[in-house]
Length: 226
Image 1: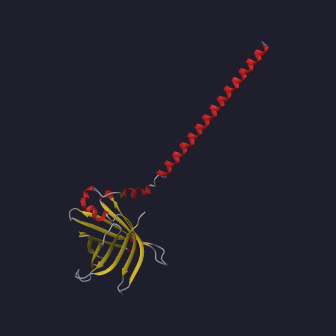
Image 2: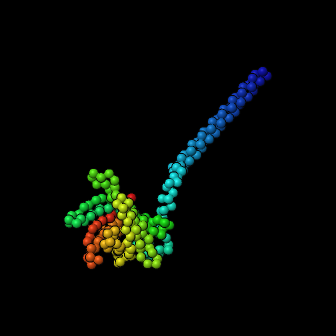
Image 3: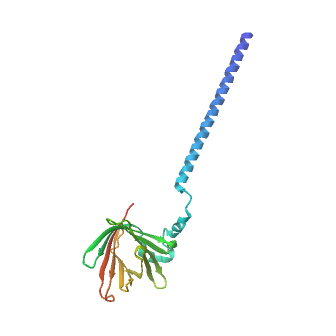
């Protein structure tokens, strides 16, 4: 009897130990699962934080509100006049000087829809030449005047206190805009040889009331991909 009692006690102890080991194992598994879940939650939050970025700077709110991804439906077919130029272009600028020489500079042109797609804005950037510190920048706002049935354009170059307005429309495969320069002389700006990946912008001026035109600028644009 004593021997049987000892055997039973040993069995009870073994069973108790097995139960305790199982409990410990389950407890450890639960901690591992909870730990992995915590890591996963942290990873997801980190990814969301990366996507959304830090809280917005109120000083940038105007820039965010300015941009539009597409033209406004009210523009109809007129939207295509400048929509085909939306994007970023690498520029080979050429300036025709009075002595007959041509000065070349490099830069870029950025074009996009703004103001809920009712206007197109661009930024002309000229890279600093050797010895220069600052790049040159100018910006254009273009919108279709539904009364005049023409595109009206305002170009501003703050570095040179320069503001000029022109207006016009598509003529065949070209866009031709006319106005008056700050010295009162007629000017003609045009977009020529427009293709999906390139076009040529020309700036001309007349000193005889529009009878003849002198080429002052000719800029060749190549669409930047990627």
